[in-house]
Amino acid sequence: MSWNHQSVYDSLLKKGHYEKPGEKDKYVSLDHHERNELNSVLYRPDTKNYSKWPLHINDSRAGFSKELFNRIYPALEASGTSSNGWKRYRVIDWGKFAEGLGLS
Image (cartoon, rainbow, N blue to C red; front, side, top):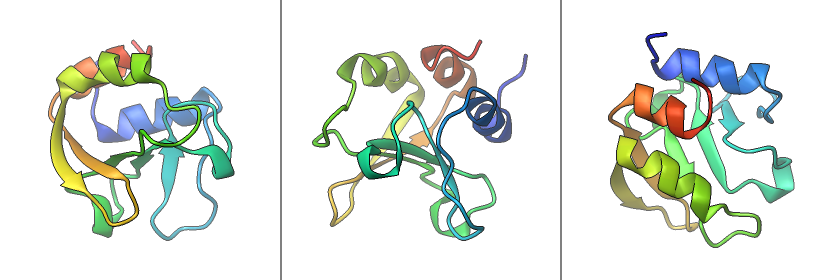
């Protein structure tokens, strides 16, 4: 399969990952945490505010998986940290990212 932003997003949904309700700034979790425990989210491709850096990770939150992060990190480019502690990333290789998430 040829992976891209949309196919990874859709695959996470099919696996039952949490998706933010509503239409504004929609995202899906990378793990199976619920809303109040989220530590890693991928914004939907058509989300204007986050299209350049669609992956946000907060490694200081409970349940953060260093193992998961180490698997996906080779596919990422860091952007910096927002004021609320979330680190922003661009996915530079969707195939490696999907593999790290266990989707392929």
